[in-house]
Amino acid sequence: MQRMDLRRQCAVAVAAIMLAGSVLFAYDSIWRCYAIDCLSLPKAMHERARAVNKRARALDRHGHYEMAEYGFRKAITLHPEAASYWSNLADLMRHRGRYREAERLFLKAIALEPENGWFYIDLGKLYRNMGRYDDALSSFQKAEKLVPNHASLWSYGYSQLYKEMGLFEKGEAAGLRAIALEPEHSFHHMSLGDLYRQWALEEPSRYAEAEAAYLRALEIDRSSEAWMGLGWMYLQQGKLDESEAMFRAFNEYVGRPRGEIYMGLGIIERARGNTAAAIGHFKRAHYYDRKLGGLRESAATERRANPP
Image 1 (cartoon, helix red, strand yellow):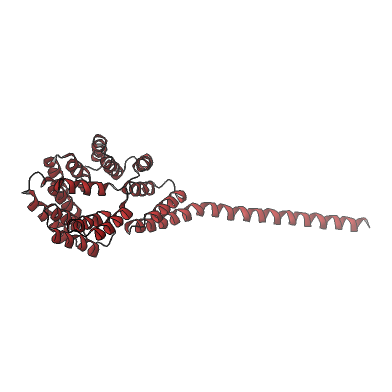
Image 2: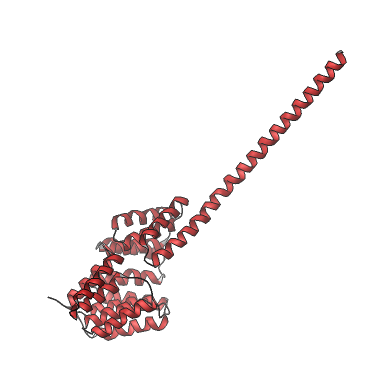
């Protein structure tokens, strides 16, 4: 009887040990799986953020601004340490005219990647849009310390800034430096064309240089926005048919909605006395680029070319 009790006690003890071992093994398996999930979750979120950001950029390019903004914000939520996502949203805010928010976002991107010269270029472009030329110049100078041979610094940055400040000779020198660094980049030629076009309001002989620069940009890339520059240049000269042809070529070859195009078409129709058509174009311009600095610049150019 005692032997039976002893056997039973031993069996119970063995069963208890086995059960405990099974529980420990089960816990160990659970924590191993949890640890693997915890390690893979950030990677999955980062990949998702990358895909969302890519989609948002495509939406931005095609004029779907509200959806693009949602996408950029979603990407930031998924991966807040990615400085480029903050910069992408900032650039969208800049184009929408939400300048204070854009400044905050650019500064956040710079805080995350202080050695990224491109962020300083973008911030300088923002300050240029805001009319804060001293701040823009300072931002471009910071970029120059980081990326002195980045052609976009000299075209997107210095040349465009000097153009708006009316310092055309400095702007020309910066634009030519950009072309020397990247001779086959269409934007640099287009940017120089923009400078000559504005310079031509003071020195009409510059129109020939503007036209040559725009045509060179189109020779390099038929989808260049130089069509728009040519459109405004011809409009400044009162060549309505030529201007309209260039604006419509922009829509055909570039295929990206831009308010400046419809504003130009509206001005042409107004000059022809087609009020209803002009209003339709102006409404489309407002839809695509409301509050956009480019519209104000285009309107200012028209006023300078055609004073009341």
